[in-house]
Amino acid sequence: MVKNVGQSIPTYNMSCFLMAKTLCTKIERMLNGYWWGSTGNNSKGIRWAAWEKMALPKCKGGLGFRDLYGFNLALLGKYVWNFYSRPNSPVTRLFKARYFPRKSILHAAKGVGPNFVWTGIWEAKEQLKNGFCWVLGDGESIRIYKDPWLKGKRDFCVEDSHMNGGRNERVSCYFHPESKVWDVQKVHQNFHANDIDLILQTRIPRNMANDRIAWTTSTTGLYTVKTVYQHWSSHNFVRTEVAEVTVGRS
Image (cartoon, rainbow, N blue to C red; front, side, top):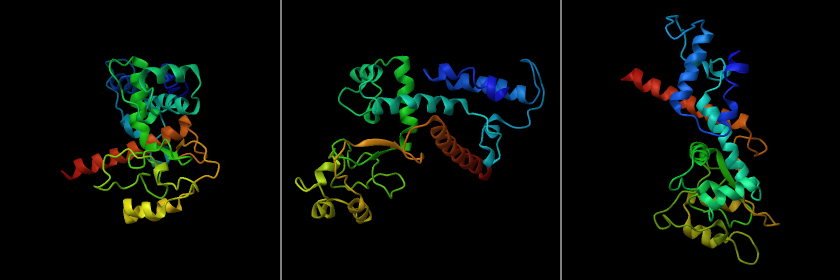
């Protein structure tokens, strides 16, 4: 009942709008009360575990219930993926013309006076952006110092140097203009020693296809709500553990 009914009813709304955290919490409290046998607003039944614990994956001691806010973000993040993978769709063209006409969706700003739908999509993009990375193609879309693209790094980001801080150079700036291979001398001159080997080991596709976005925790690189929610919940679990340890020590 909790999984198939209580948590399924708001799914349609969550796929369109970002629900307030307070509303998510209220629904979760109702579900928690139902699980432990408490009914009614004035019930004083004992709830033996907080919903945050029950929403953890079973492999981490929880019951596998959904965290509604995290699931909401995963659903809205699908728009971010579709904006990139379906650039010619009417929905993509509409939002791109209004909010990111000359940028990638990952670089889009919230803007002035955003509507309620875009506010939710933008928030999902901000919360989940550390799960996206770029796959190198022609290097024209990837900002070499600001975008995640370098395999072998935990955050996929190049370590910025003081000399190059704030520049918006594209990865293609470090290709030989004719042979489409790395300009070894230029790479050695502009990057930290920790990144040089990783950059030179990155293969440049021969067909020079466009750069594309991938989801890092998926084996196929494709965005699925399931893998994205698992990514979000695992990171949220780590933050919860750190907070509990800190409080316990204090």
